[in-house]
Image (cartoon, rainbow, N blue to C red; front, top):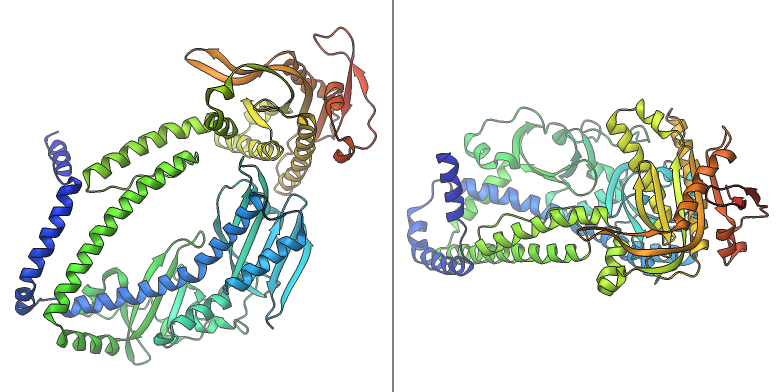
Length: 612
């Protein structure tokens, strides 16, 4: 207890007030300027080692900065296209417009070798540059692209831009990096996705172009053995690359020096200690070579090892020249400026972190922690408070629909005032889920339900519906509850048909993986409800109540009479729902004749329409 208390007290003493930190910075600069001349005259025992490490750091930092300058614009332009499409400023229903936007991105960002766009019609609009430099624009079915549908479904359940795993491109005949981003409207409904790729050959060319001074001695490794970028990969023909052998090993690129990178290092106490984790010295081709490298994480699931190598004598000659040319005034100024810059950047970064945290909370983004430890007391306290608020609000965001929260932000308490509205209610249920779940481990049961709810939620939100609640393996959704919606029945029917299509597609993948299909019943009914805050004063729920809700659930149960053993899904709609549909031809339902069924709570039979 004494040790913990003393450690906590020491940590508290290190947190400085903002004014004290600024004063300490200026005093430190003054002291450094006063003693710099004495320090230089006295000399430093490790000057050569420091210069050696400085060069290694500069080489790697410059190379990483160049990689980011080539690849980050790809992400930025892709997100810009997604934002324009999400805001309706780019027409996603026009293949010509989308291909033109992708073509403009390729002209602005040289690293992009191909780009594509896909939506729920499962057509893939793409633009790519052939090896002869000619740009091709075309449209292909998404299912004709290897793993295209799988990657599209992955986009459908994500909410941010990400760099995917390396894959082989038959069009470019080489492996490619790829970055993908979903297109989501302001209500977070998924409406499509865009993708851009960077060919390994183009990446090697662009990095090599910026690394002329290295004599082509640059490399990027994935793991310790596979080569992602190298001068030999600018034109990868002849390396025997294919879909089963996407990247060459360090032994296959024809670079004997690189092939020796993991040989036992040369034991040089002076430089080995200075290099540390930045690299190593090995012997190859009768010379000693210095390898410098650093791990880079951002552009895919696996980290990259970015580095260069050069002869040891080149490094030591630079050290000698820099040591002999040291100037007292320059060293003093450099240290003072560097220290002032570090303090300023540290303060700015901490303050910016808090600002970004507040902006993220406003956007209801709670997934990532905001706080970064700071020695500045006020900033550290503010960061802790924001992180606690994030933790609490994250649960709030998980239990309350985002569209309701945005509505509350827009209208205040008036948004949840109880009122009567005409709505359409949907109930869905997985057939015989309980016996299926008994044979599955708890984690697999949760994963199955989460995947199922994600598929249904995407279809419901795309049609402006609100998921009212989850009841075991059932979903209750409402159209027209949050705000008046004249065509609520049209949206609900479209969502139900989309769910039917998604369930069939997902079942095809489940069968291919050896799993049993998921069978679903859906019931739709339209009518008046009371919508608003329902519950005790300390625990309320924004929901809808009324006979319309009960009938919708009974229509879902009625699906048992219509569902055969071969059916994967049955969708039943009441006569009230079909009567409320405003644009029936647009739904492409075809001729559907109702049947009469007795429903609990109603003396007379009701009309039942089977939509799927």
